[in-house]
Image (cartoon, rainbow, N blue to C red):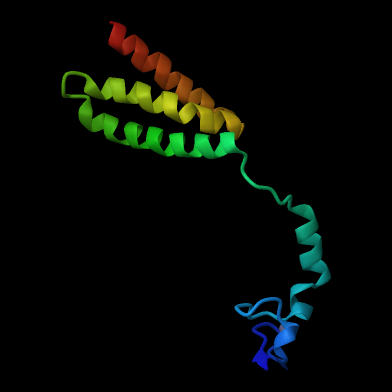
Amino acid sequence: MRKCNICKQYKPNFWYKTKKKKTCRTCERTWWNSLLRMLVKQRKLTPAERLGNRLGYMGTAFIMMSPYLLPYDNLGAYTYLIGALLSLPQVWLAKQWNLVVVNCNLLVGYGAYLFN
Ligand SMILES: [Zn+2]
């Protein structure tokens, strides 16, 4: 017997979906929760999205350290370019077009900065 954390009633163990669950099945399956579940699309990340995520973290690290490296012989500009290139696939696959524009702006801006 366990106590449900929502209805506060004691119910036998088989009334709970797993051993760790604190909410009984009756409370889990209200019409509101089933409606919310129906609205959410369950999906896994594709391999390209996974790769994009990891590259994105690396790119973010490069972009983060760039402002501190700028005084040292423009090293920061190169790391800005690398960071923008690495972050681009993630935001492109996630269709976050505002961040795609920001990354392209980084590429164009610091590319021009280096060539001048
Ligand atoms: Zn309950």
